[in-house]
Amino acid sequence: MPWDARDTMSLRTEFVLFASQDGANIRSLCRRFGISPATGYKWLQRWAVEGEPGLQDRPRTPHHSPNRSSDDVTALLRMAHERHERWGARKIKRWLEDQGHRMPAFSTVHNLMARHGLLPGTAPGIPATGRFEHDAPNRLWQMDFKGHFPFGGGRCHPLTLLDDHSRFSLCLTHCTDERRETVQQQLVSVFERYGLPDRMTMDNGSPWGDTTGTWTALELWLMRLGIKVGHSRPYHPQTQGKLERFHRSLKA
Image (cartoon, rainbow, N blue to C red):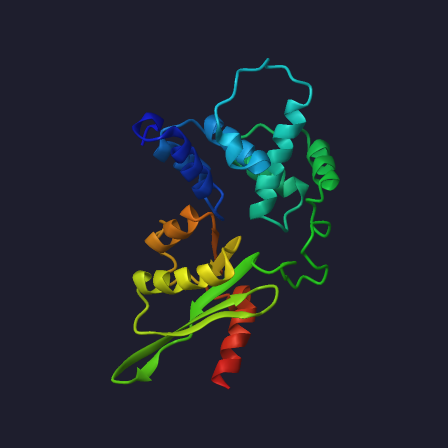
């Protein structure tokens, strides 16, 4: 998928949306989009700092800018922290190096992370007790089906959607199946009423995830809307603990 095959800006936007997802393989994405890892990281850095305007072409500037190194490293650290909020400086540094980026000394990484509130226990929204709750509505939504049961000659598949911060039930509706088209139709109604969340978490079953590690059509649709997509760890329902408690309340 070379850059000149489609509009350059739309390709850059699509690349950074995919690359910003939890667990994204940056090198694999770069191969898929026909760009070098250095180019891919450049767009990710600009996206992290400036958003979409940072993806525009800009005039060439001298290679030796006194603030560029620190700014670029900080952008990378912010991107890594967004995916791995509980990691410390040493682990973040090693992970970025494994991704192919040249990093400064550990002390520099640690100081930059401390300065920008990226160290565990200093980042906003991460309580010291280990219980996680986002600090505002629409930061994270949790979504799942609550099983299914006979209903009116067919089956009822209750679709549930919960806001992580407020525990407000955004959606509790009857669905006749668990197909992607059905879920998307319900999500459109929820988005029109409550707006778009920053992130959505689901389990790994259909239609949310794919055991092969490829993105599903539903995930791609959400990412193109600018929503980050995450999945609970297999056999670890605590990841969606608030939704699990909500389901238990429904059952009771």
